[in-house]
Image (cartoon, rainbow, N blue to C red; front, side):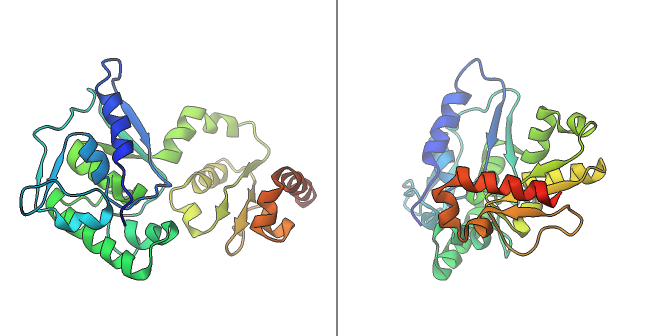
Length: 257
């Protein structure tokens, strides 16, 4: 409830104030906080004031205390803007939003999820409406940075694939192997695995998956895959000797294909 993004904002401030920097790319995800980026925005000079005109304390639970927002002392973004690279489609609020989906992964109880949802809703009522898919990324940091610092959201997986030349590589590929720590429904909602799967399908290249753990089944249209936790017997065992189980996963993939 008290986790925040202030240090992240300090890094952004350093970059924005460097005369050599023309554009900032921020890869958002895997945050420990659910504060809508308010901590980062505070580090960028934006003030969030309570009913007494005093700056609120850091942390998602304190967003409910905000009565007004002052951007007069905000650090100016670089001339070519701020691009937020996100791998999720989640909005800020609701059943698929930052609090409901991601805060339980950070240890929030049901009561805390509700409190964080209310806090985010209150903040959104002051900062402005933003329905852009992905605004719930990194505990809602994408929302805050777009609403109050002029950032814009782009699909991280799409941008990185473009920079890496994945499309060209697929033209000469016989097989694609991709994966992540845990393959579940979220993997196909804008994340790298989902985007690579789409590119492979469009190029008519078969795809297989190597993952740490698996929820459900591998996609029916794929060549299948292997799960290290299944091979080892548990995630803990797999992580205790990753070299061994990655080797075994490679053997199983070879036999599978």
